[in-house]
Length: 250
Image (tube, rainbow, N blue to C red):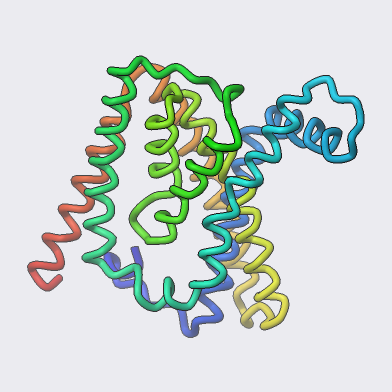
């Protein structure tokens, strides 16, 4: 987006990281609000299992920890290779290609799962599935891949229904985005908030929260009545447009 609209307002890397933290926090708040009922159940059951107390939903309690485990692969890779990811990924060409390739991969996975009549629900989540889908999140460290897109792709290939795949994607965003927020806030605490950025960060949190909630609501509504095709078309068209702009030296 900064490249596309020629936004060069970040006067330093510290400013960029601070604003990025605000966007992550806003997205996390949106997930908490949208999935508040499910998250309360997972949190309560997960803590009961952890402290070996009698739980009304021991299976859900274990699955709560499966969701946490799903964040480990991307979390480890993200921390170890943070500098390399920041410096080498995120070029317009790579983003455009990722939009197209992973968009087409999603529609292929969706059609394959539909043909196989995949119907697993969120309650069918196993540790194996959580780690497979979680490992797919590593690819989302590359800008343009889309964390939700790649996790939905992996979930569909793992046998989950469209609705379940979308919900799992959003549920798995809590530990990975939550971990990213904690990591970035720790950096921000160490370096301090750049002067004059408090208000823009607040605006960023609110904007990311609203857009994140709308995105989740529209995605769940979409998959209940249609396929992921509209989302894929958007990705392919947007990716092709970026490649065209690059080719014409925009």
